[in-house]
Amino acid sequence: MDQEKIGKFISSCRKEAGLTQAALADKLGITDRAVSKWETGKSLPDASIMIELCNLLGITVNELLTGEHITMEDYKNKAEANLLEMRAKVEQRDKTMLRIETWMIFVSLPIYVAMVLIGSYVCKINIPLGVALIVLAILLIVTVAVIGIRIEHDAGYYECPNCGERYVPSMKAVVMAPHIGRSRKMTCPHCGQKGYHKKVVSKNKE
Image 1 (tube, rainbow, N blue to C red):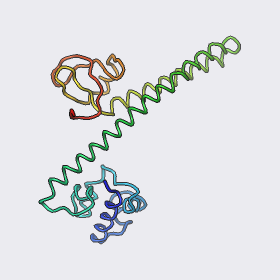
Image 2 (cartoon, rainbow, N blue to C red; image 1 turned 180 degrees about the horizontal axis):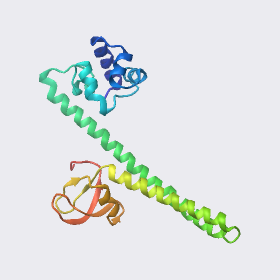
Image 3 (cartoon, one colour; image 1 turned 90 degrees about the horizontal axis):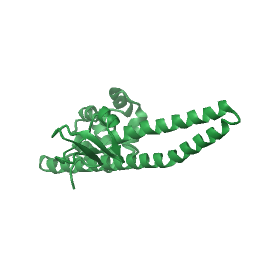
Image 4 (cartoon, helix red, strand yellow; image 1 turned 60 degrees about the vertical axis):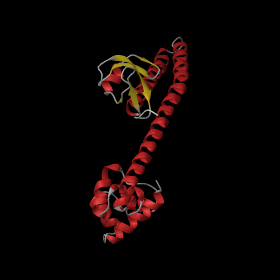
């Protein structure tokens, strides 16, 4: 998406609607600085207020994301192009989040082991300090585990090995499931079969 083009379009539509940046911001319950950032192409409107923004400007969401008025003949093609681009952005974000999870584990595990070993050694000299180091190590690994599980739940989908359906399981299912790497043993909500469901980024098979 061309943020600069979208920004200029928002500015043009706002002026056509007879609204100042401050007035538009007030109607949306945000700051005029946020509107200014949209119009200069520094950021995009949050998805939660896109529909309300479009209603105020008298445009459709597809026109907003395209940065121009769309004729009925072009509407379907533009809508499909916008959906594909948004899906690509979501998939790229999910890939980035999963890479971050991998690096978190890669970095935190050696630190955890080192802190436990150092804590065990220090306990021979200073028990409170040694125990404190071990407790900190445990808190570190628990924090990383919680963040990692949240990322695995939110980023991408799980694919059933039986029916091939890709879906987002409940957080409880992810937490409770035995796992090997990113594959988790769960019950498919579509076919009801159990198996190790692998993590995938895209909703659709390539």
